[in-house]
Length: 491
Image 1 (cartoon, helix red, strand yellow):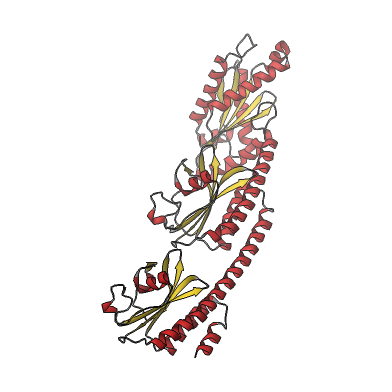
Image 2 (image 1 turned 180 degrees about the vertical axis):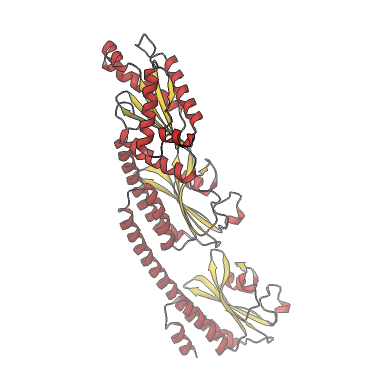
């Protein structure tokens, strides 16, 4: 019997198959109604597989020393209760149980689990049966350990393949938004977690820049997470991965509503901390320390890719910046006006173009020199930048001319913004310039003055020309196109 049993349990390296073989042999050879294998997780035993237990009882977790199985694990020897009604250690798992034998599963001197055998007969296990089950548990322990090692090696191999695949794909993506989205998708698929999120540092806060998975997020993309809160902040402070395997029991709310376990890994590139990689799953106790090393490798790959994407982003921004004033240039204006027009068409929110010119700038250069003229340009740019909203776009259009895109704006507001800029510049004391510097501006609105880039810029230029013709230092709304007048008069 022992030979047949050992051949059966050692015939496969698949953990589930090994466990099923152990249950089948214990049930059939020893005529048992209820058999279970409990595995050790830190200091607790949990039911890995069973037959015959009443519904719901297999979800219990037993601390070492608790119950007959816990006693067997603690004492590292078989524990037998001939009549469970007379043993205070007994914990109900099946109503028909009358006797119970718990045999520790040992690898060398370490307990890895317990084989729990129950019978509906009183004093079912005699000394010979207990000896046989103890010998069988030795074979079962070897098979269990072999299956675990095989599973671990296979898991590591798949993780290495996943890390290699992620590394290859990360080097091919340089756009930051696309990169972060891909990071979350690849890690979620490769490591079989429910949700993956990337938090990046923005001054003192963390910002959720990307997330992928099936859980319900507490924070939307772009949302800020205040400093000092959450497992992610503790991981940043510690400078190492942190695991929370019982998220429901802690006070800090996680990123997702259904989170049972969470792991946070700092994203560090060349000594600079960029943010945190957050993995969430619905299961409690889903992560262990063995998971940290491969995920740290992934985090390092991601951090380097994010840093590279940041560099590319900066290079792109430099291509769109005016070297003298530091504001956006005409190339960026042409890019953004198309986007603003498309947004206004889609959502009906309106937008405006403001063309601004510094009055008599050539005369100022001739009188005070180009160096002072350049300083006036820089200061005017700074004034404009401080006065407009973050969602608006300020560009140096050419020479002393500026273009401003006002998002989600009507005609009245656009005129108000332009007038505020005019008054601020007029009142400003420019060092080295003994007389006031003034500006003229023209405004045009979508769709009153046009629906294309050329129509809106031409209309704003017409408003600027009208302001110049009227004596400078003023703001004029673009004239209404003739076709609009014709439609209004019914012609």
